[in-house]
Amino acid sequence: MKYYPISLDIQNRNCLVVGGGSVGTRKVMLLLECGAMVSVVSMEATRKLQELSGNGIIRLERRPFKTSDLHGKFLVMGATDNSEINRQIYTEAQGLGVLCNIADHPEACDFILPAIVKRGDLTIAISTSGKSPAFAKKLRKDLEKEFGTEYADFLKLMGEIRKKLLSEDHEPEAHKHLFEQVIERKLIEMIKERNITAVNSLLFEIFGQGYAYESLMGFHP
Image 1 (cartoon, rainbow, N blue to C red):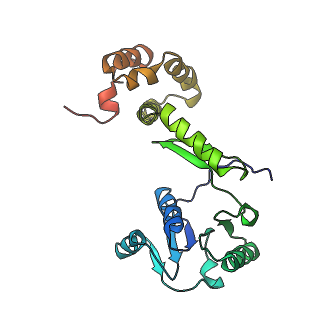
Image 2 (cartoon, rainbow, N blue to C red):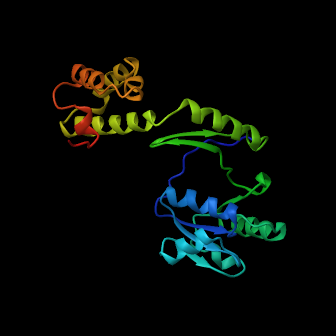
């Protein structure tokens, strides 16, 4: 199977998780992190899911899955330990055109979930096309050591600079060479070393007055 790599916008989309154990809980947390509106159907539910439901963050129904649960849903994730129910979820989802992922069963998935390294707005996805999740996990751990929090700070800074440039009527294409200079001049390393003096010196050299790290990042004395 050859998968088409894609980053999916699920902000405010209705998503369903069937299964309320530890696997289902992890699915729910990732969906919430990406801004989805999450419903869970399961006879059992972890304490975390009960807490989320009690706070009105998710909709939890303690009962068996039924086909009507898929109506109006953008995607469904099956996280039960019952192969018959998992097959039913996949079959019904196919008939309704709902994107489907069944945990640990790539043959019953419209999409599979990669191993992920997240550093703020930086997302690094690792996929072995379902051939070796263990190897994907190993690569994720390796990358987590290589990519630290400085990458999150760097991307936040780049976003704030871009926003400020656009507010000053700069054309987006005119920014390209400026950001290339920032990357080539090793701004990430300066941020990692917390050498803010060097950061500000570089920002002033490339962007001019008014582009100080502290103010752009929202730090105040």
